[in-house]
Image (cartoon, rainbow, N blue to C red; front, side):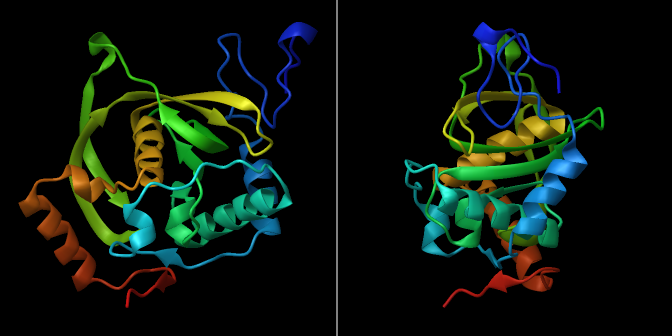
Length: 216
């Protein structure tokens, strides 16, 4: 990893570029493997569970318990073959998500964001990408959903350091999708009633390919 000038050195897990955004594209395989090998895979919570439909609590303690949660989230994400996972998707009420996601150029991004907030984009940067979207908490269902093809998120890393993350294309979709989760919103909530019904039908007609927590 490239070192920065002393007065700009980022004290977090990842280095930052000249614009202050994390460099989450280096050593991805090694970093993801380290997380998930330390972690224990947990089953995925599915739509209908109350924890998915309410805003999560802010992360205030950046301790060993949080790091264990992050490790477990990467392990769970690997088991489910996902590209992003929010804490409430494994039943934990905490504002943190992890990602292992390519952008539209095939560049891999791996990282952790606590207490994320999406940056409001000016109108001239809100070009919509109308692509298919799925969710580990809505197994086997995919629907077309328009989202901006560029996103910026502010938050903290797992050590509590402030970070900024940006993405384009598929990775931008991931950042928006996972941030939504932590504020109690699923991609289903952005669909029309007919589209939502179709997505739930797809889910009902197919068996999930990974362990899930059944709703009562």
